[in-house]
Image (cartoon, rainbow, N blue to C red; front, side, top):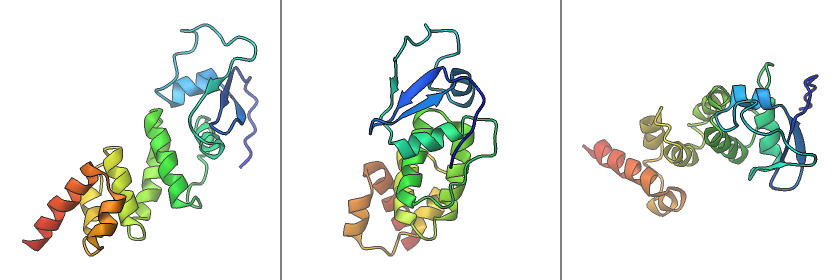
Length: 165
């Protein structure tokens, strides 16, 4: 995915693995909640870089969602990458973009319900969480315990008792 953009780069972000990306403060302001309103801070000095904790792949997708263009295709991403992308979008308040990621995760619930249940509990996305949890009821308890954090496990336990009634 190569993105051409005629806008002037006025922000440089750096990934956790050291790659740098040009970005636009106006787009970051408009498409996220995590960056300041343009003009409310001092402009970056020469060579100043915003260091982010995400990998190059995740930042590349995030920045692609910060343009007034058709969204990038997330359907071919591996589930692990999709989950990390979803967490990053949640972290930076990229609500519109996260809708695309959530839709793709929901499509994959039948194939990977336990990993998606863990994600949904982590980011407090309760859409389809009961359905997702129900798809995990026949999994061995040690496997469930190894995948879920305490909040997701509470949801799982609650539903496992309800399904026995």
